[in-house]
Each structure stands twice: as structure tokens, then as C-alpha cells.
Length: 164
Image (cartoon, rainbow, N blue to C red):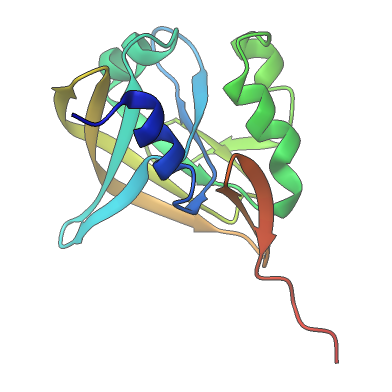
């Protein structure tokens, strides 16, 4: 049997985009930082988002049935840390950055690399997490060209323009 620490150590070497997942609805605005996001299919456009069931925002996502995946640009490390920390309230988190909305009303970070506005169509519980199958209903791109990624338990930037 694979030990949980061994698994986490191995997964730390899987480079992933850093995302802030947000929702808004009856329960207010909530969000968390996630690397467990991936494309499922382009027909219909669908993303998969994993959220720990023990997080304080989990139930709001299930209740609201909508979310936005905000793919962070290189300058968003502070926003990532705030949405990952239990030290910040939802109100404090959303004071960082400039936010808007698209179709679902979920908060969209205006200068995110790209934001996917989604409706949650299915939820499956696997171990400690819920796997959210999300149909993309709107997309917003920015002019950012550098992405924030997470590798070996640290932030890195990729996509820096080459100097000529």
C-alpha cells in the first residue's frame, strides 16, 4: 500500500497551474486555491475541479452549483496565498485583486491569465475530496503572458517573453 506522505511527495513533482476557484450565491462569495483542475472534454466544454470536503467553502460550492476557475498569472502569488490560507476571511480575500463576473455571477479575477465561468453539473465524492464536473459557459482571457505554476512545493513563473 502506498503511504499518503509518499504519494504527496510524488505529486509535488507534478507541475500544475495555480488557480483560484470562486463562487457566489445565497451563501455569499467564497473561494480557494487549487491545483487539481483539468480539462475533461471540449464537446461540451467541461472542466474537472477537486475540492477537499473539509474546507470551509466546500458546502457553498455544492449549494451554489456554479464556480469560476481563475488561472493565475505570474504576479498573483499573494492572491494564491490568501485564498489558500485559513487566516483570511472571504471578505479579506476578495479585497485583493480586481473582480468582475460573467454568466454565472461567480467572481472573475479581471487580470487572471484566463477565467472559466462554469455550472457544476455533477459531483462525485472520492475519499476526502469532491470531484466537481463543470460545464464552461463563458471564458475571459487577459493580456497576461506569464503563468504562475506550482512545482516541488514552490511557486515558479513560466512563459516569460524572451529578450531580443
